[in-house]
Image 1 (tube, rainbow, N blue to C red):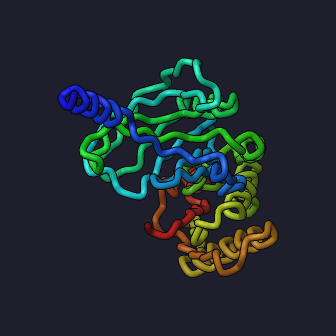
Image 2: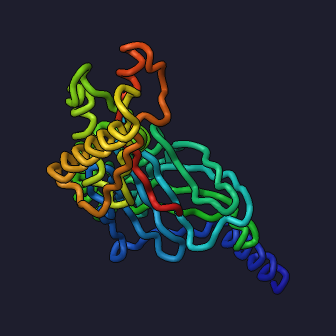
Length: 289
């Protein structure tokens, strides 16, 4: 009898250990919040008690984009493979899990799910299911561990996240961080395309608090004296600055530099070359991380 009880206890212990440890927010603690809501970034964030945070992120850009970031409280000490599945909540037993993808948890990095698979995760959450990662947890002696996203209280914030995505600018930082503008031939007026570019830059800078400064560099052709061209480039740089101020940018964020006829990019002996040299270069700066 004692032997039978010992064997039964061993089997029970083994069975309990075989069950994965699950990190998921309880009904009372499932919170979704719109952590960023601007024309340059949308962030839908969910706290996973005891584990960390999961966040869906979309950013301004030419293409539709979405990434899911899983940020643990403890860094991943080893690179691991994880299975991402869509699970039914415990009050809906009998519904089989749906595989979504295999994900690599890289050592010392947050886990990432990109593009279509991230959209699938959102769709599963909107249907009341729980996307869940399963992996061998080094901190638990390589015991299988699950990290899930609860769909409780999800839909209202998801609607706000979709509204934010709809209002993202159709261009990103990389598209306008360095812009070369030109003048109309024989005039000090920028081309229509260049004026449109100025408006795009202003829209982006107003929406992105991480832009540290806007640097305006102006150049002329070699027609006239060196002193005259230096002053002319400064006047043009200040005119661009005034345009930005009128568009709502703060004075302290704008720096101007007039270079005159220095640093030509084309031959000043031809009309085409001089037109290319009469230019404005605008660069956006972000603080180093």
